[in-house]
Amino acid sequence: MPRDTKTSMALWERYGEYLLMAMPYCDELIADAKGCMLKDVDGNEFLDLAAGQFCSLIGHNHPKLVAKLTDQLQRVLHIGTQFLSPVVMEAAEKFADVAPGNLKRSLFLSTGTEANECAISIAKMYTRKAGVVGFSRGYYGLSLTTKSLSRIFTERERHGDGPLVPSTYQLITPYCFRCPISAHYPECELRCLQASIENSISGVDNLAAIIVEPVVSAGGMIIPPPGYLKQLKAFAHEHGALLIVDEAQTGFGRTGKWFAAEHHDVEPDILVVSKSAGGGFPVSGLITTAEIADRVAREGFVHLASHQSDPVAAAAVSTLIDVVREEGLLQAAEQNGAYFAQSLRELQERHPIVADVRGQGLMLGMELADPEDADSSGVELAVAMMGLCRAQGVHLTFTYFEPVLRFIPPLTITRAQIDTAIAVLDSSLTRVGRKDYSLDALLPKNSYSRAFADNLGGKRTVKRLLSRLYETSPQHWVGKLTEKSQKAGGDH
Image (cartoon, rainbow, N blue to C red):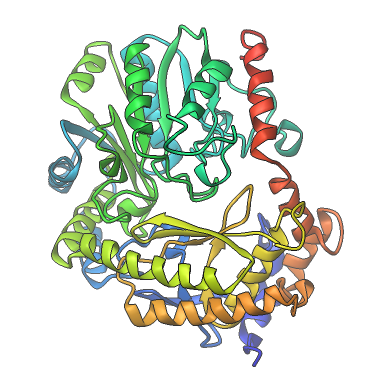
């Protein structure tokens, strides 16, 4: 039965002309959020399998978080970079307590992009080098440096950002399900890493840092195989570089451990957090060793940002760590994640369009592929699944390149809510498998989102735009990386 969106649509017509549209937004306007549930202005509810923008780790509007932020707001909201508040010091101690190994010195910032840029700056100052390497499918932020590290952004004609930042390089992402070098783990002995080194950064003598996500989320929900990150850190140190691990989505318990790097028994030189760190409040940060912090301090390291070490942001981090501990959310992520994953694998057995299920803890992916059209990008399947699920009250997102549905809910999700999600996925997979849907009917109906899509090039623009993002193969990028290495010293 179609959901009533009368109030939402009226608000679109009343206020839409004042919005600078950045994407084709959904019709439903969210007015309330609690736990794992969203409610729009018409009273429709949605089970949120994306935790907002993967940020609401402990659930939307967790009462302890709201109480702590309210208290802090009444005390001091912002004081600039010349002062600190006690809550900043308390948060730094708690961060060090849960961080792996010898990571001890932290700095709280405001966005993931800023934190990655700061981490890269520290690495460059520490090593006195300039080169930075990221995964080809990684997502590190929206600055020019962070964009230059990822193939998601470096198709210049598609994004108009101009030349890439010099001395930025890319590793082939270790995607075992669709191996870019047609090998098989563990017999391959991680040949993809050696191929990356030879094709991307062979001969580079100015390497300052390698930055990676322990779960490559936007790039396909890809987990590096066992031993990969250990070898990568060894390579970095052999070349005088630091290993930066970006735990924007994985940090503070998402994968069943405080940080996903722990699954690989690897201690980063710098660990970066954002998204989940504030439980929905905007905050980011990084933590490094005392040795690295002291060295760059002697070199004159300074970082000045308007919202650096803000008291309210620090209060959010401090409270989030407390809630994860007090409510046993590490164990919940591990146990409910295993239950969710097993349920998804049971769907895979029944639905041919499900090519793979993978993930860690409550960070799971379901890759889709059309079994009747091997050459199809499969993106229409993902768009249809997202639309059909939302129509039944379940919100989810999918990834770049091959379409992979992402299940990254708050860690407070219950088994009953997981069962609800599985039932909706089951019925939606059945309809998509039968091609029993109209793609156009599933897209937003408000005139502003429609106009946004039409302005990009036609009635089926959303599908076409997404298809362009996905129209690739791993082998294609291996060739591109080889070509890039041959041009090293020119563009980079």
